[in-house]
Image 1 (cartoon, helix red, strand yellow):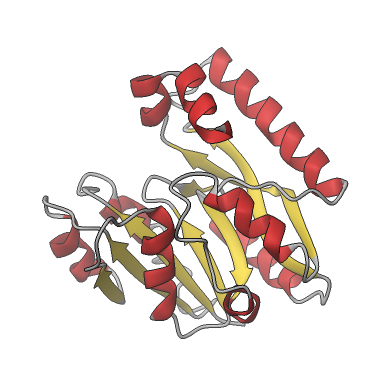
Image 2 (image 1 turned 90 degrees about the horizontal axis):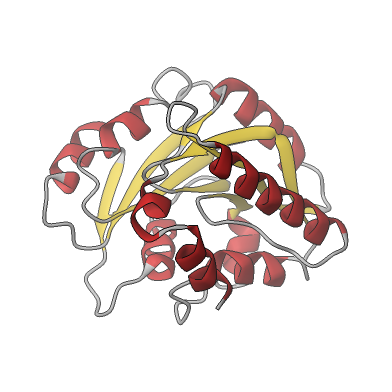
Length: 219
């Protein structure tokens, strides 16, 4: 099985090298290509990405959003499984991550996978733990009862199924991650695998606060 890791970026010069280099030790083992899909960065993101990634593609259309950037990156993916990863995400035990993903995505009834998500351990607060615990619980319950839910910072989808539903809905500027899982659910099961654990930066929550961020997501 082969993997294409697609990372949408916008002014991520401080993160992109570290995020990409986490795959260095396992790229050949799991046949991984890394694609950066840039949305018009004005810093050094593109130049840095060209040094460490297999492909760097830039979206040249108008009104770029996260859906358009992910779809644009997917157009250049040559491998069987698409791993959509935000530019501030680090994977806990990357070998186990790809072992479990590979074994799970082979099952005929599994069409999409998402991991458990937490804040970077060094930055995590009690509030972070509590809110992410609730989000994970809701994600598991909704997927368990057939009402698919997933956060887009890390989503794993077979390329075949991604193309069958025409990828992310480019009209969505938020909740595109939930929308794609719900449409994929028509093709098979979508699951949260809690053994898969990734960490995200708290920067969005520190800047906007949880109330504003969660309101934006739900609305």
